Image (cartoon, rainbow, N blue to C red; front, side):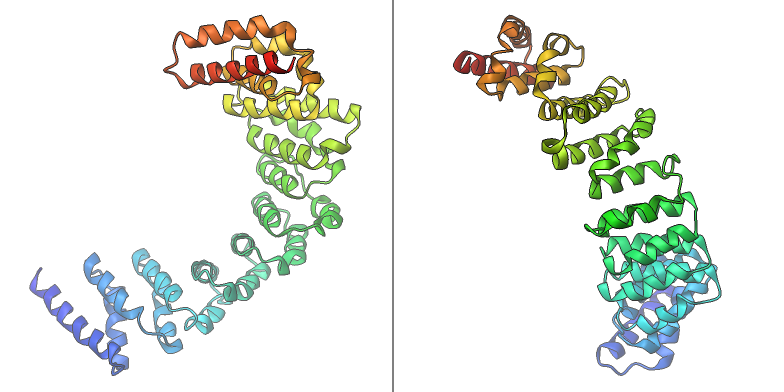
Amino acid sequence: MVPYEESIFQKLDIIEKNIITRNFKSDDIDYLINVLSTDNSQIVVERASLILSKVQSPDIADKVSVLLFSENAHARNVGSVILAQIWPASKEALEKLVEHPNKHIRKHALDILNMTQSPDAVEIIAKGLDDPEPNNVIAAVEYIGEYYESKYLDKIIDVMNRINEPMLISTALESLEKICDETCFTKLPSIISSIDIYNPIILPSFLRFLSAISRKEDIEFIEKAIEQKDVYYKELIDFLKSYTAKYATSLDKPEKLKLIKYTCELLNSEQTPSVNKYELVQLIARLEPDYVVSKLTELLDDKDKYIVVAVLDFIGSANSDILKSCKHIEPRILEIVQNASKNLEGFEQAALYVAGMRALHNLENNC
């Protein structure tokens, strides 16, 4: 340690004792702020920061706030961390900063309020919903969603209608996904009336939002969204899973076939990962078991082993009525099991073997 740093540490030791014994003076705090503002080594800065964070006082928060105006990015970051750590002593300072004329300072204040992880900070964060700077509004919307605070639901919808900017709309939909309840059913038309939900920035967030609060008629949005299946397959699959879980028992035959059509488009896409194709086969089986039965030969010959495993799992758990229609593919299942048994080291081969044996067992005992 260089002599200069040694003298700083000696001074810091004295200040720390003053703070612990509550005998510190304003000059002590000013010294700590100066250490954090200047280009000192990381170990010096960390020590000064740790000492300063022990002081729970609104007056101290005002002095720490000065660091947010520094041209030194590290000083700004340190100031942000300290203000978050000394919350709620920093509440008054942050309330002033969130309305500061400088848009960057307002953004810092919103970030710090979120860093506190305190529900009491949400009311101040919500002031950002009226910020003239779109990026600050986006931050406020995002943070309110992270706190699952439904109190500002209507305000977020108003913001979406007022600022029709894709990134903001996307963030707002992700927050609404977290805070919406059944009342969102009635609010959905006002939410989407003025936005382009098929915009590539907005669509994935919109699909996740629909997965959370979908109505039966919302399947209409999928017809056009499915055109972008190669990019948003995960969001589309999650929507179809959520939709099926809610409405499978109430769908009529044409509605089920339409849903299966969309599911098959995802199943046949080369961009859909194999593990998701397993989910899709299971989804079809839940919607319309007879459809899977009608495609058994084709599906068992598919080159994607996850599809084959999904079909075998379907047969392995099927009831006797379904199994009667599956008896003809027993030789093919036996062939799959025999081929898989030759090399069980890989996951796919082992999965094929286990699923195939289960399917054969079910056929033999219940058919």
